Amino acid sequence: MGYRFALIGYPIKHSLSPWIHEEFLRKANLQGSYQINEIPLEGNFKEEILKLKEQQVDGFNVTVPYKQKIIPFLDKIDESVEKVGAVNTVAYEKGKWVGYNTDGMGYVRSLESKFSDSLLNKEQRILLLGAGGAARGIFHGLIDNGFRYIDFANRTMDKALSIRNSTAKPIHSNIMTLEEVEKHIHSYDMIIQTTSVGMNPNSEQSIINLENIRAGSIISDIVYQPIKTKFLKLGENYGGRIHFGHTMLLYQAQLAFEIWTGKKVKADTMDEKLQQILEGR
Ligand code: ATR
Image (cartoon, rainbow, N blue to C red; front, side, top):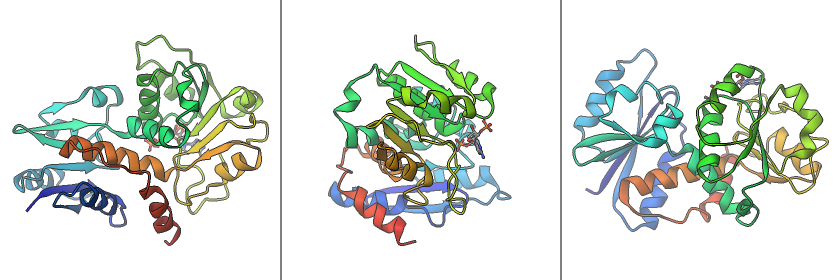
């Protein structure tokens, strides 16, 4: 029968996770399947989770809007969940349901897959745009990897402050408004857009102007619909090295698959294919 994995969330009918994990299974020479369990907002969440547990799946992914709601249904949470307060991966381990968050580390892996040399410099200055759940995960992924200079620009300053205060590590971090940061944009080596601004159908929007970025800086967007967002187009026009959002999807899945099966499969060759699938939509 092989491994059995699932995804819960809403809406998830068009999720790319089944494709990604079935590719991983094939690459790892393992038998298995990955099913979609859409739970409507008005559905009985508790009942759905009990059903999933009864089916004895080996693990499941959790996406919006259930990343926090799942926590009380787990027996144990990993350190990655304590930091971020949200779960995206659940594994059945020795009779216990264990929650993990692979988003932040997956994001860092996606960066490493493309910019391995420039990521060796932990002194580089990083800017996070936005301060929601995605920013929180990426922030912890970055500091766990040794980065120490991470500023925030966000519409609501308090939310950025709450993320900054969620670590006890000695880091350097300034918080600014989105207007203010445009004046200092040349001082960053890496700029990471973590909000949904620019996502279809608002593909003409960019959260800030990138006119004064430093040539060669890394310009990264977690939005992947469209693949090349307005933010990335601006970054490219002004001499930045761009990093696509769909790669985060790939590497957070790689890490989840590793937790479930103990096998690390290469994901870099899937990047282009995933891009084609998304472009064909
Ligand atoms: P997620 O958990 O997926 O990251 P979220 O919690 O809704 O999503 O967070 C989205 C982030 O995008 C927030 O920081 C939000 O800004 P606020 O903190 O001020 O709410 C930011 N965001 C969303 N839409 C925005 C917009 N149109 N302009 C600026 N920031 C926006």
